[in-house]
Each structure stands twice: as structure tokens, then as C-alpha cells.
Length: 483
Image 1 (cartoon, rainbow, N blue to C red):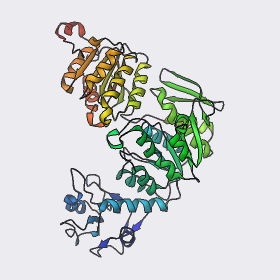
Image 2: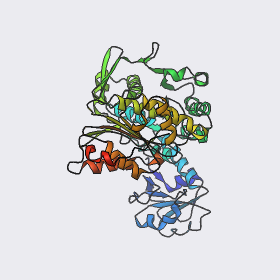
Image 3: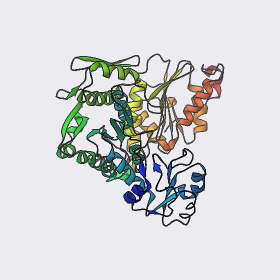
Image 4: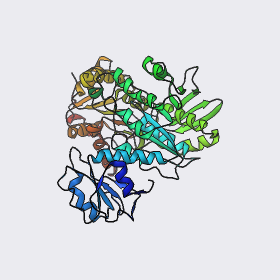
């Protein structure tokens, strides 16, 4: 973060400083919204959320060494820390945080890259950062910081030394991308694949497309857009494109064209413009992210050798189709979130997982699909039936829909388990899993599928537990048939 005085803070946020203590001599160099991670010298911004109100933690913030606080003028505790630390009283602390972030971004000469889409945006953001970091210094959005709070906090990480920043934009309703991009002012925009997600907020895939295309509007005519070639063919997107556009994919006519694509034994290999590249990743679906990162790197003058060296260093993020070895089980940890497109990618990955005795998919509901939820879960079941699975365990409100789709597509019902609680699911999984098994664990964030992964991790640590003792248990097993 660029150093900021309290006088500047007051001007930027239209704040009233209710004390002059330390205001004239002190500068702010970092901001926190969580007292648990607050460091001495941070400015604490008291945000009010659905579960917690930062104003309830003002005393703790000051005790931990906060240089000051930003509080709401409507809150009864706004004067509470006046004689202990500088306090800026504003109409809305969240709006103040966003104003400070926009100011900080405007101070930076770094190249700002905005990434959005329905699927793959986090992996793409991480891939771009990994590749560019081989040659340049820069930051990326930490964790899942991609919303009205997360993007400002990401922008506040920019400092004078940074040459680039890769900022992820998420949205669950129209207009959000415009706001996030407005604070960031990206010069390069990246659209990943767009499909059904957050339909309870957007209403339709058409609205999703229109909303994600808000990034195109923010880039304008003077910037640069990267997007898959199939996205560039969508009329709504094509109509709004005015910037120089670089398409990626495997179709003739792509600006960044992947040829000779193979995936064997955990190695994704492809060539672009005659140069060969390799990535150690668990699935083909990492190709789109790699092509975008490669394309941006080439625009910035990086060589093929530099890009390949960066690809060697890339590792998928935890919970984002990360291949984990638990004892002698190979587990695709894709617990973080799920949508129809990402579920299809996960099933493709488990289908191609090599060196396993059998394949098991443990899938939680895909949330946020609105009135089309049953349809997309039945479609998921049909995809699962064609994914070389030996067993399918499904959990949640729409588990029966997945099972119906799988059976309709030809999967044996005795190899499908339908569950409304994870306790029984884990019991049956413990009977079906065997030596050198391959598993996919995936579901929407609020399904908490990481609990299944944690259970597998604990079980794998026990002596002799990664083998299968189904012969002893078979007589006691009652299959829960879908239907």
C-alpha cells in the first residue's frame, strides 16, 4: 500500500477526524478489516457483515496496536476510541474502504489485469501471476478476494515496487463487475468460459453473459482483451468488443492456437507457434488458463523459455482440482466450488487419471442454479455415467437428480449412493474405496465437501487403512439404490 496520511484519508473518504491524536505525524501503510490478522500499525476499518460487526471489535483493534479506525457515524461506539487512536467517522466504512482502494490503485503505475468468468477464473489468475512473476514483480488477489470487499483489499496490496497486478472479479448479480472494474481500471481484461452459475442472482445464462461482459466495457477501446475463441463468437460479447482482442483455443483462426495437445500421466503438453510447452497438472482443462498466461507473457516480451520455466513452477491451488496423494489413494481435491462447467472438467480429469485401480466420484450439490437446478443435476448424472467411474456417491438436495441422470445414461444403480448426510456417505465410501483408488471430491462451497477430504486424509494416516477390506464387509453392505 502507498503511504497515506490521516488528512488524505479524510479528504478521500469525506471523513470527520474525531481526534487529532497522531493524525498529523503518522502515516497509514496497511489496512485491516479483521482483528484476528491485524498487525501493529494497521488502520482498522470496521465493516458490518451478516454475522459480525467490526464496531464490536474496536477495543480489540486498538489493544492490538491499530494506528486508527474507520467507523460509521451512525454507530454508537464511534467515539469510543477517540482518545486512544485516530478515528475517522464516515457514512459507510465499506464505501470508505473502496475509495481508499481506488486511490491506492491510481497511485500505482503497475499493469492491471482483470479476470472474470463463470469457471476457471481463480486458476487463470494464479497462472498469469505465476508466469509473469518469472520476469516481473507483481501481486494477485489473495485467496477468494473477488467481491465488493475482496477486490478493494486486493488493490490495497499494490505498492510502488509492483509492476503488475492480477485482480479477480466475481459477481452474483448484474452491475457488480462494473463496480469492481471501476475501482481497478484494468488495462488488460481476461474472460474465461461463461456458463450457468449464480442463476439465483442472474436469472439466466444470457444475463450471466451480459454481466461478465461488463469487463469488456470497462476495458474500452484502448485496452486489450483475452478470451476463448468460442466466447468471442457469442453475439452479445462480439457486439461489445472494441479493444484489441486476442482469442485462445484449439480452433483454426485463434490468435494463441494450441496444437498437438496431449495429456498423459499428469503432463499436459501442447505447442504454440512451433514452441513446445508442458505443465504438470491433473487435467486438460488447465489448457485455457495456460494459453491466456502465455499470450499475456508474450505481449510483455517474455520468451518461450521463460514461460516454460514458469510453467514448471505452477501448482494448482488447494481445492482447485489439486491432485493429492493420500497413502496409496490419488485424490483430486476440487472441493472449493462447483458449477456445471467445472463439474464437467472435474469428471474429465478423473476419467483420465492414470495408475488407479478404480475411480470414485464424490459429488455435492451445485448451488445457486435457481429453478434450473434439477435439470443441471440430471445432466451432471448423465456426464458422470460417461466418465469411466466405478462408483458415484452424491450428496445433497439434488442428489436424486444426479442419480436419475446417471441411471438414465446407463450407469448401474448398485454403484450409485445417494445421501442426505455425510456421515453415512463416509461409511459407504469406506467400504467402496480400495487399494490405489482414484477419487474426485467436488461440490459447491456451502456443501463443505472438504470434510470428506479431511476424513480421507485422517483415514489414510492410520496403519493399514488404505487397503480395501470389502470381502469382510460385503455381507453387511446395503447399497442405497437411486430411484
